[in-house]
Each structure stands twice: as C-alpha cells, then as structure tokens.
Image (cartoon, rainbow, N blue to C red; front, side, top):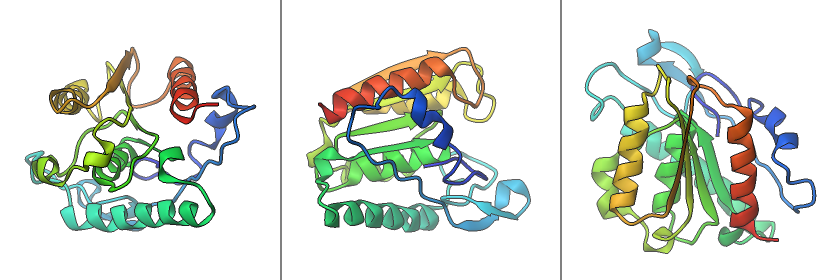
Length: 200
C-alpha cells in the first residue's frame, strides 16, 4: 500500500529487485481513495485517511482509517475467493500505507503470513490492545525506517516497534541512513523476508 499522495503504481519498479523470480507470488497494488487532506491545506489527493495538524494522538482520521481497512479486507477476501488462504498473504505498505498494514494486519481475524511496515507508525494504537487478533499474535513483522526521515521521524517508527515488541510480536527491525524513501538494501531485505514468510 502506497503513501500519501502516491498511487498503486508507486512500487511496481521494486518487484524485479526482490529476488523472487522463482516464487509463485501475486502482487496487489491498491489505490487509496482521493480525499481532502487537512495537513496539505485540504488538497484532494490519494490518502488512506485524513491527517490533521496537532497532537499525534488525535491527528489521524479514525473514520477514514476504518473505511480504508474495510477496503483492504475486501482485497484479502478477493484473494480468498481465488483460492489463496490468509496464511499465504503478506500485508505491506509505506508511510500511510504501512500504517494501514499495521492496522489491518494486527486486527485481522485469520492468521496472515506477515506484515511489512516501511517508514511508518501505528494509528489508533489506543484501541489496539483491545482489538488485536490472537490469530496474528505471532505473525512475523518486518519494520524498516530511515534514520534521517523528516516526514515520519525515526522516533515514531521506534515507538511502534517498542509497542509491538512489548506486546511480544516478533519484529525484525532495520534502519538505513536515508530520508522518507527506500533504498536497494531495504528492498533486498524485503525480498528475503517475503521468501521466509511465504516459504518455498
């Protein structure tokens, strides 16, 4: 799942660099709805939820998050109808899309193969303890962050990591000397994680 203002084509170019040529895998790159985004002066752009100025605890749009979660769960259901079980599905996203991967993956009622959260943070974490799914309590998580990220600070990524490890989730954590972006080393780590999560 892409970040704020991007679209589903944003990460097509990384696929050849994942090292998964001999792994039977389908990639699904969904598009977020286009909505007015308060923090960007109300401009309409692709966004999984609105972001407001102010305190981090209240700046995210709970209604929009849950609406997008329903859209993502519908994509999982579509894969089910194609014969793909949940335990063969990895949710992945960057920035806002990574927040949605966390949000849906940690709450999804059936076991998933993994969660990939890139340059991101937790949303609605105040409800997570009560809403988290026992089915995904041991689902492997790959979290990656840029140490010089000015958009989503490293501290926010570390806070998500610390919450998850404190709740006994198996988190693989990596940082790279980059800003709000991706690097080749990160893509290679993602490919390795996907290979392990999906098996042979």
